[in-house]
Amino acid sequence: MTGEFSRRSFLKYTALTAVAVAGSSLLTGCSGYAPVQHAVGTSNKVLKVVSTLEQVECTATFTTFKLVVKNGRNNALDVTRANFAVKADGYLAYQNDKLQVTSPDALSHQVKKGETVTYYVTAKGLNARTDGPVTLTFYPDLEYSEFNANWELTADALKSTT
Image (cartoon, rainbow, N blue to C red; front, side, top):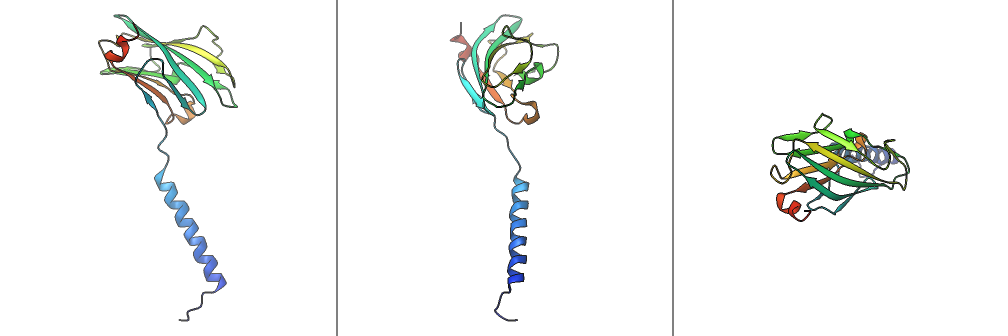
C-alpha cells in the first residue's frame, strides 16, 4: 500500500463523510419550541405569531381567557377551536364540548398578515382559581403542533387579575 491518496479515493471518502454527517442530523430530529409564560399580560412569539394573554375571568363553572393574536407571517392563519387547549389536573378541554372559542373581531377564522384578532377561549366546568394550575395552549399552525405558546397559571398568578 502506498502513502498516496488518489483523487477518486478522496472524493469517495468525502462523499461518505457528507452522508454520515447528514444522516446523524436526521437522527436528532426537531424538538419544537413551546415557550411557557406564568402571568396574565404576558406574550409569546411562536412562528412569527405574537399571542398575548390579556385577561382571565373565573367563575365557579367556567374560565374565560382573552387572547390577542397578531399574525406576522406572510400567509394567513386559520384559527379555529382546534388551535386551543386548556388543561388542569384531571381536566382537558380540546376540540370537545368543554371548549368554546369566540371572537368579537371576526368569525372568518382567517388572520391575515399584520392583522390582530381577539379570541375568547372559554373552558366550561373549570374554575382556574380552585382547579389549578391551569395551562392554556395556543397552536398557531396545526401543521407544526410542536411549536406552541403556553400560559401556565397558578391560583396566585390569577389573584392579581381580580
